[in-house]
Image (cartoon, rainbow, N blue to C red; front, side):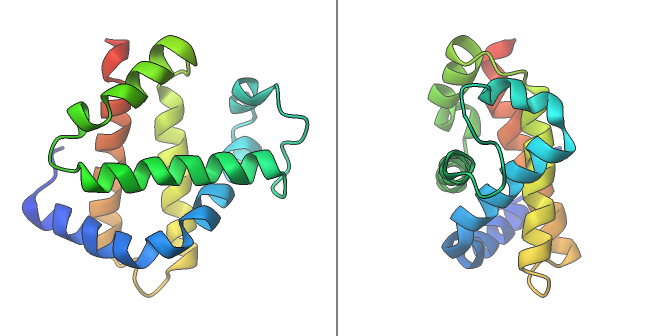
Length: 143
């Protein structure tokens, strides 16, 4: 499912509102993923604390959302724009690409909770399509 011009505009507009809380979104989304999908904890076994208040969880959540913010700026060519992240996750970190979809879902959940008025059905669809495109771009080097 490709992003239309309207989808891209919707994503950019919503990101303008959400980006100020990106650290909170990322920390909560990552924490939810680790709780609801405990198999994802294997990638973070080097962290002493995987609780929601963990500095490591919060920091990596900020890193993830910085990547999402970067992807918003590269929305017209995500495969090229996220090439380095795709290579990192495929060849160095060896993250199962199914986890990108899991984290994307958790990001959507947190955004809906944090922005109930702004997260309209139209925004939901556009952000879902965008995060799915980000997940596909990150999985590109796995092929």
